[in-house]
Length: 302
Image 1 (cartoon, one colour):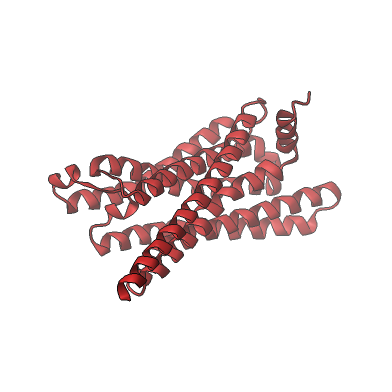
Image 2 (image 1 turned 90 degrees about the horizontal axis):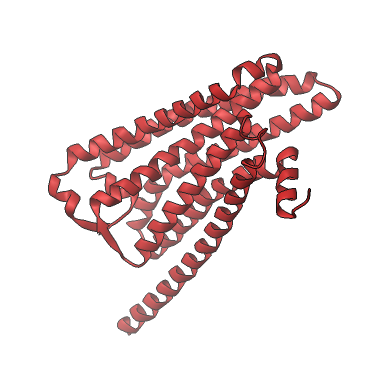
């Protein structure tokens, strides 16, 4: 009877995982299609790729698209138990981890841009020029590279050369041979996110003061900017919670494997996919100028 139960349970788990993988494929295709459509729209008008907030928006879209694509590839490879050489896996995970950090940094930069636009309008053109925006993007990638470099350095120091030629199922966990490596990664990431949260709160308070003092059209524009900051803050919160997911999943795995599968699937949908779909909402649909261009592009309106 125990054998029959294990067979039925195994078939049920396989069917459940199969359904979950299909749902993820549908969601990833939808989000990637939307992101690609928004990126094409971004290049349709010069005013978009010469304006700081739209340039940062495009960087966020590209970063999110990269994350969606690579995580989906790793999910499919893991589902079919496909192994690859550790060296190739490190390259994929390096890209994934880099853009996991680029996204929140970009959100923070977009929040600061809104702060300058609303609280320092006379200096907005000077501070948020296309040249300064390029410098900002380079700084974002530089700071992101610091984190992954530390993770990669501790990994290289912890494994032998023969490890790179082994074949394993690829995942981000491959970087963390020892528990202390995961703690170092978490500490660095949480420090970054603490700084980002302070910036979000600072800009929120400053914009709130301006919103209360504004009137007419200025008041409407300021409150819209305030809501944008709140949405960025919510995205950062989801990204911050994602840092704790590996610890939660590891604890649940020791209790029950079926529960682990459910928790990991929920974490992936809620804290990996969900933040990726908020960027199109914040600027792609809520921004009137961008939305009108998007609508005219979709429906071929002049």
